[in-house]
Image 1 (cartoon, helix red, strand yellow):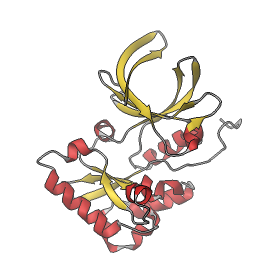
Image 2 (image 1 turned 90 degrees about the horizontal axis):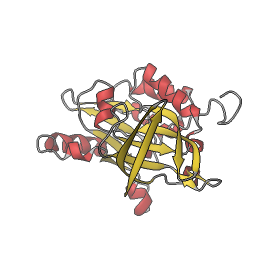
Image 3 (image 1 turned 60 degrees about the vertical axis):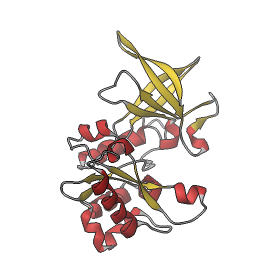
Image 4 (image 1 turned 180 degrees about the vertical axis):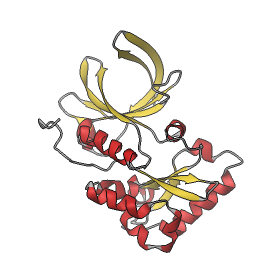
Length: 239
């Protein structure tokens, strides 16, 4: 991460925030060649935007622009957790262009969905990316909460359950509802049907799967993330 100052403007209002930023994104679709700018991960140090402290500024082409905003809205309207996402104008140096601002899946994200703070699990690309194996495992997304003394035992038990039941080889989320253990994942079959209807199969790729864990009820809740939905091609007159 690099230290940075960020200036926010909305109408006649403006403010300055200290932040830490770094590049994010695995593939070249996160880079805009024309402007030599790319997707960024941002952590605000002394301010928040609508109670959002950590967010990404994503190259719109990598998520098909407004399609991502519409998909997030639809999934939330259907009762699923999904990160707040808007299109914003950003100036980096002398370059001014649009980015998708999408909140990180962290404490503020959970609070926005009116749930108690708890652990978020995600499919990990680590083994396949760095050890060149097709075995997929789960990891903890919000590690600072997981590492609290009163959460470690419960968290490790849930992590062990996911890895023993759903640590998969070349699999996707759509396979899970065929397994008896999937009963611990709320509304999973409906979620899979919705992803299929939206042609959002990218959200079922293991690396993109995210689950909120309710430690009191011992249940998991799907979180919509990065479905690569294409209702219309970004840049068309539809938008």
